[in-house]
Structures are given as structure tokens and as C-alpha cells.
Length: 486
Image 1 (spheres, rainbow, N blue to C red):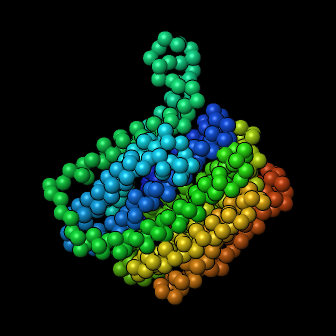
Image 2 (tube, helix red, strand yellow; image 1 turned 90 degrees about the vertical axis):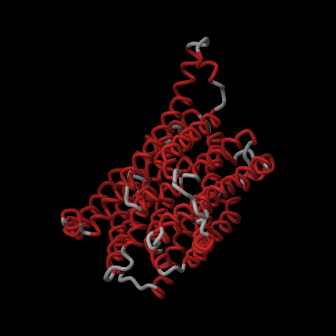
Image 3 (cartoon, rainbow, N blue to C red; image 1 turned 135 degrees about the horizontal axis):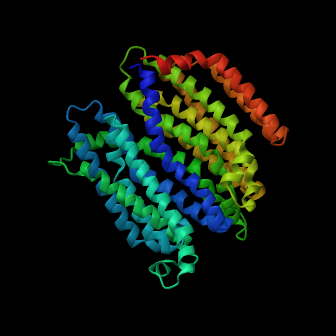
């Protein structure tokens, strides 16, 4: 099969499986914004922001290291058992420390202590399935991967709907039923965490087969080499996560106390409208990461890498313009409470920032293939520093608009830095004229539609149709070749 066609096929499957968990947060926005005021939704957002940060700590780059060493290992069972033992031990240590210092940690994170047991449980369960899921990807078993991921989403979504929508109605309609004993008023955050905990527990049960091994062997030398490779990846991951979610914490700390959680809730809800770009970029990355390693030794892999990036920019440009044009339509479907809509001006900035991040991930092949992951850490750290500085300086004056600008600045800078260093260490023949053309036109049309013509849907649709026509004229035949060619 054509390598590019295989890539797009696997990207579609992995994308569905990886996108759906992220899509869950998107699907839940209408529910959360209908049953919770912005302040309470701000609390939920803050907890899930910490989830994102601690997930990176608990993985500490071992997923990427697993891919790197599993593909070239003579004894793959050794890589699997060493990775499982490493993550298992570190997760156990994390839970023990978390339980002992639960109160202190809760105060430092600015969340209520009553939620900490749920938080620790969810984080631990999610950490224990990192290597099992990575093994499915490494062995190119996207269907099993997808089924389990989708089941996790279905359970989580179903429980959220039950606890937040159905249970209150049943409990109020029949006070003598067992459901009235389960229902607790103003318990929304705990219900949300319980839903996540149950879904994560069932997912681990489905993946336990990976842990049933004939024997375990902890290869200390291999583990050290994996950690050496993984640590810069972890630093990069932490920096990425700071760029993505730390602004919520800074909003809660730097804005006046009486409006902080409310403003954070509005920002987070409107931020979700950029999820279409995030989902596309994530799906693409899930497909290309194994592809990068498996094709690094083929003849002229740089050409394939360049084609992949070109197509990513083409498709990403369409998504950027589409989301911006239909932003007002989407907000009525997703963010149900009008009190959240004050933050709509952030949407184009966040969508573009997510696009830049996706391009960065495509450009990052050079430091992964050449084992220069430390450069990924350096670049990500620069982005994180920019995020923190811009937020810290400007949030008191501009609120969440400062956070949106900080995100765009950070990801744009990372994209440019990765391109600059990539040319030095692993030159790839990107089609710059094409990339700049699509990126530039989509940004220009987005500005015209959203800011100049004040989100006029008629004008926006015309601009989108013009862009789609240009894209089909220039790329139609190439895309057909990839899809049809065997």
C-alpha cells in the first residue's frame, strides 16, 4: 500500500480514537454550561487543567521512548516489561505521596480537598494504560485501540448525562426511589469526577491482558537509556501543557477574586470552539508519530515528511477558516448560556494558535529522528516562558484576551524555532510557497470574516467558498492520487 495512503488510513482510525476523548470535553460543554454557572464551570476547568499537567509528569516521556526503543529492539518483551514496571512503580509512589500530603497539594493547586481522592485515582488509572495503548499503536492495531478509546468516551459521556441531567429529574419526581438517595444537590463537580473515575477503571480492566506476562524483567541499562531519551520529551510535554492549560490557573490567581472563576469559565467555554483544530492536529500527530520512526530508514524519507506537512497545512487552513466563519453558529449549539459569550473574541486567536501547534508537531520530526529531543525541550520551554510572562504581565489589564494572545505567541514562536533548527540538523524540502500561500490566505480571510465584517455569515461563507475553490483547483488531483492509488 502507498505509505501516504496507509498513513491517512491509520490517522483516520487513530484520529477517531484519540479525538473522541477530547471530543468528550467538547460534547460536555453544552451540558456543563446549562447546569453550572461560569464560576462553577471555572472550578471544573481548573481541575482538568491540573489533570493535563500531572498526566505529563506521570508519563514522563516513556510513551515516546517506548516507540523509539521498541521498534529497534531485538528483545521487545524486555522493552515492554521494563516500561510497565517503571510506570507502575512511579504511579504507586505518586498515589502514596498524594494521599499523605493531600491537603497541602489541594491548597497549592487551588482546588477543594474533597476532590483529591478522585483526582489521584483518575490520574493513576490513566497512567497505567499508557504503555498498553502505546503497544497497540506500535504493533499497528488501530481498531482495538479505537474500540477501547471509544468505549471509554461512551461510558464517561453516559455517566455524565445520567448524573447531571437524568438523576436530578428522577430524584425530584420520586423521592422514595433509590435514585433519590444517590442524588446530592450541588454535587456536580463530584459527579463529573466519579464519571471519569469509572470510565478510567473500566479502560484499565480491558487493557489488563498486557500486564499478564509470562515473566517480568527490569533491564536497568535499557531503563536508563529510555529515561535519557524520555526526560527531554517530558520537559517538552510539561512546557506544552503549560502553554495549553496553565493560563486557567493564572486567570484564577491574577484576576480579582470576585470575577476570577467566572472569567475563567467564560474563557474555557469559548476556548472549546477551537477544539476542531485541536482534534485534527491530534489525530494527524497520532498517525504520523509511528510513521516517522518506521520510515526513517527508507529511501529519501524527507520527501514523504515534506508531503505530509504540506497536506496538513492545506487541510488545517480549511478548518481554520471554517471554524472562524461559523463561530457564531457553533456557539449557539455548544455554549448554551449567553453569559459565556463575552469571550467569543478569543476564538480566532486560539484556533490559529492550535494550527501553529499542529504545524510545529509536523516540523518536530527532525529532533525525534536524530535523537536530539533536548531541542524539543528547549523550544517548548521558550514557549512556556512566553506564556507565563505574557499572562502574568497582561492578565491584570486585558483579562482572558491576554491569555489568548499568549497562546498564539507561544505556539507561533515554537513553530518558527523548530523550522529554523530543523534546517540545520535534518533538512526537509518543504514547499514553502504552498505553505505560506494557504496559511496566509486562510488567516487573511479569517480576519476579514470575524473582525472586519463583524462575523457576517453571508460574507464569511463567500470567503470560505472562494478558498475551497482555490484549494480544489490546486490540490484536487494530488489528494485523489493518495486516496485512490494502491
